[in-house]
Length: 204
Image 1 (spheres, one colour):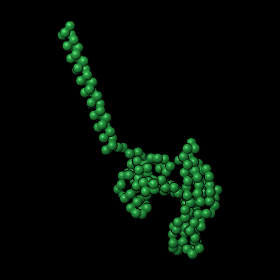
Image 2 (cartoon, helix red, strand yellow):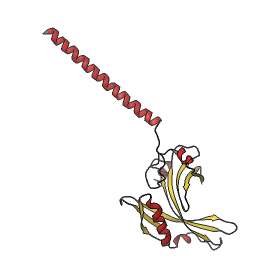
Image 3 (cartoon, helix red, strand yellow):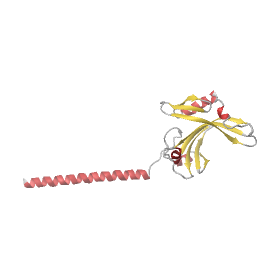
Image 4 (cartoon, helix red, strand yellow):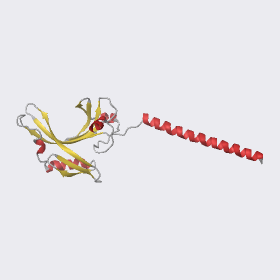
């Protein structure tokens, strides 16, 4: 009886020790997995959707896809996929960075030729947006699962197909070319900083 009890105690102790050892190994495996995932984290391929929340992307893919590298001044660069009348871009801080600071969308609407003396700030932004341009915008954003909701003189409000997300595209005009005759271009655009980027913190 005494020997049987002793064997039972030893067996229980060995089983508990094995269980604790297995549990310890399990914790070590989880910690190492998380550590390795953080170091070698696989970044997603770019979706070229300016309205989704995917900012952690593999920037090498942008170069492989032939995106243009455009200066955004102050050390920022836009890696842009430019189509005929619109562009989607990812913004980084300094060339060689692995992190997306922001992304955006641009839709070029109108071109105006006028002298510098005749131009007034915000003058062209207030022109009504033609129905033809609205239809074209609708066609473009449909691939991003958005549709036009409200059209004003200086902005267009678009909404996702599930009616959850709303984005405002503002109208802006800039000088495209000065010589031989000034050309002004009016566009609709939106700029979206990444959640943890310095730009977002600055805006707050």
